[in-house]
Length: 196
Image 1: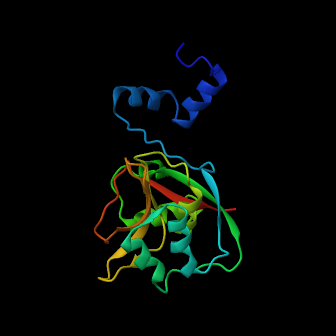
Image 2 (image 1 turned 60 degrees about the horizontal axis):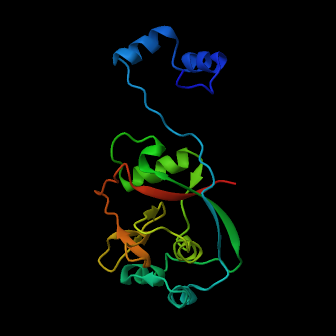
Image 3 (image 1 turned 180 degrees about the horizontal axis):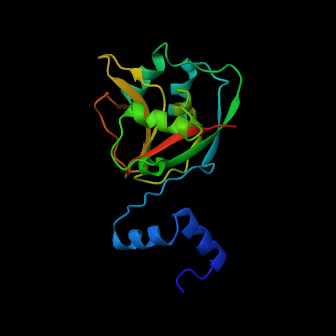
């Protein structure tokens, strides 16, 4: 048997979850579509935020060899970007947009709402630079976005933090434009805060 670690009781329980024998037959015939969605998320990383005024964050990042785009710098100068005076630890989840139960590309508002529905919280803006500093071993070509309240750029376009390491090994903190009409690709990876 292909699933040798499952016992008959577990297989029967799965059949019950799917609605019994008639539904199973319809699923196998293609008459019923089954969509899987994760209802809880593991801790991907624990990060410390706070303890630094916002004016210190860009120099700290650059001193440690990280790159900060002009968009990210602009975001960090805005009133909407605040920092905590005391350090605090946050547990983070990371997943693909589709893992939040989407079968069609969501807007940013829909993505934020789904995170909250799944028991998560939006990232505080200051998580962007703190996570960039603490994620030293990000692999080349890796990219993800923070699910957060957007911060308007100089043109009024809403932005969120994007963290990536390019193919040359440069580790970036960037600000990605997420206009209301933008729809997230299901394969994009996002990070949000897990509720305690």
